[in-house]
Image 1 (cartoon, rainbow, N blue to C red):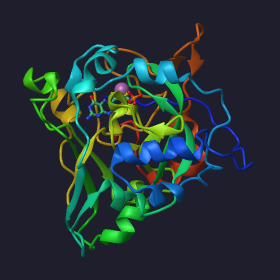
Image 2: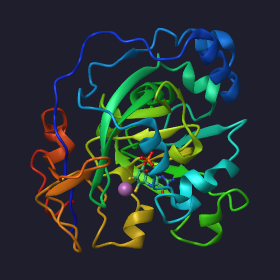
Image 3: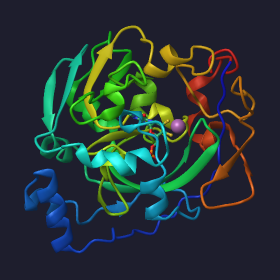
Amino acid sequence: MLIRSACSVSESEVTPHEVYLNRRQWMAVGAALGVSGSTWAATLAAQRSPLSTTETMNTRTEVTSYNNFYEFGYDKTDPAAHAHTLKTDGWRVEVMGHVEKPMVFSMADLLKLAPLEERIYRLRCVEGWSMVIPWIGFPLSALLKKVQPTSQGKFLEFSSLADETMMPGVRRGLLDWPYREGLRIDEAMHPLTILAVGLYGSTLPNQNGAPVRLVVPWKYGFKSAKSIVRIELIEKARQTSWMKAGPNEYGYFANVNPDVPHPRWSQASERRIGELLKRKTLPFNGYAEQVAGLYRGLDLKRFF
Ligand SMILES: Nc1nc2c(c(=O)[nH]1)N[C@H]1C(S)=C(S)[C@@H](COP(=O)(O)O)O[C@H]1N2
Ligand SMILES: [Mo]
């Protein structure tokens, strides 16, 4: 049995908001990603999406020092300590399988798909903690529109980089590598689902999944694969790395659900990093209004 839990829903702030960096800083960000200044200039108008939560954000230090990234070790502090060995220059993301137009995207190609937005989302880890993170990204649907899934492209499989020369956790075999995750096509097309390339107005720190990672805010954090190198459109869902690691503990959907306990702990509440008292976990992490319809008729206790 699995679980899911949620944080809280909130009304969006519609006021446009300029991301924090000045032009010179954005140019430096672009150079770090190997993207031309003009591509980044186009992102200067990046605004806060109305799909953002208005809850208080976690600090940049919290967001970048308490992480799960098993390729760099088990402990929450391992990614910040060890992910500096990850090299992201010349990064490519291959999109293939049941698509009309298989493509290999550079970071510059990805940034041309859609304007970048700031999306402040709750992230609820299956371990019982949560954070509020200001991501910079764009809807995954923009990439899918480009490659055009065929009628057989019913699910997506995401693969993270698995390079043992840069990733000590891969050498140690902590999971079945590469880290693999999956979404149903309608989940992938949902406007809340983004590919993130930054946070707090800057490119993604390595420990948060540089240079590009998935963010699916109504699902447990483990669904949001980091440092993605491949997206395959497939006809039947495949087992994910976490399903292989614990078939009774981690389901394919992994929707946050306070009513479905993890076999070893409740998912009814969560600790927001930086707070002492626990909060109630909300169904679909507080995004039920937007996403519950995707699962109409599905027994979420069985399909956790
Ligand atoms: N490739 C990869 N992606 C991953 C993980 C991982 O170990 N490897 N951990 C997941 C888990 S369990 C969580 S909670 C989130 C954490 O994201 P954050 O560290 O940016 O907050 O990343 C997810 N993505
Ligand atoms: Mo997690």
